[in-house]
Image (tube, rainbow, N blue to C red; front, side, top):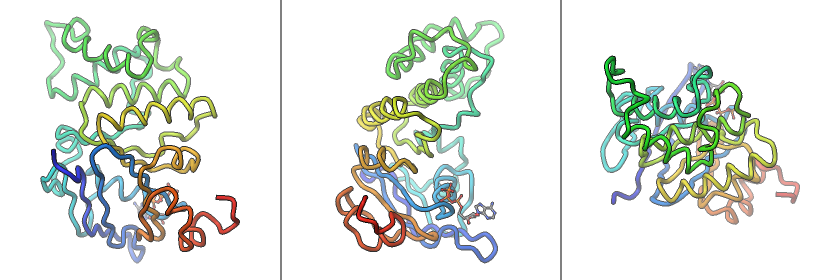
Length: 251
Ligand SMILES: Nc1ncnc2c1ncn2[C@@H]1O[C@H](COP(=O)(O)OP(=O)(O)OP(=O)(O)O)[C@@H](O)[C@H]1O
């Protein structure tokens, strides 16, 4: 087992004069949820984009399971087991829940759609898809059209799709966004369970979720990590309180 699973070293990315990533180093260890927090515009999405391969850093490297993946494409990274989730738009809204998971699993295998063997009759794919739906508690809704799911259920479905890729690490960009209190609670529980399968790098604005879930928190401000530590350490850190959490004693 390689630890850290993900190792980001001195990532730099500038947009014109703006240093969106100003020498960021962080890692993700087996079994943990590492939350990345910071004010709007701090550079969180830019960093996730560079880890996932959607954006090319100006310099620095990304190592995944001991391998330098800095020059690999998003698809190559996903195939190695870097699971990016909560791209709700990636779901096919007119398809059923089960079809979405089967298509996800199929995409991961890198197979073309079979003309003569309809994929929805592929026993192995169906087994894999149903196991994933079971995990996210959507198995009773497998025949539902995705467009009819609630926002929270779509998030669960995204997780199921990600699970079929057998990820070795998850990148999650604001999973709690748009969720009500009940949905957040359910998703929090699910993410905790998922972290046993693969560690999670979690970008999240919902501080209740972050404090409930994170084993470690890194705080990003103006493209730089100003602190990394446990929930208690981050809550007590005076720089973090001033720069981000607001020093009002209520954190
Ligand atoms: N393609 C781009 N071109 C120019 N500037 C960009 C580009 N992408 C991001 N930026 C700028 O880089 C900075 C970091 O943006 P980013 O979206 O990474 O922040 P963030 O921490 O994810 O913010 P939020 O919490 O609001 O999602 C911002 O000032 C943003 O305006």
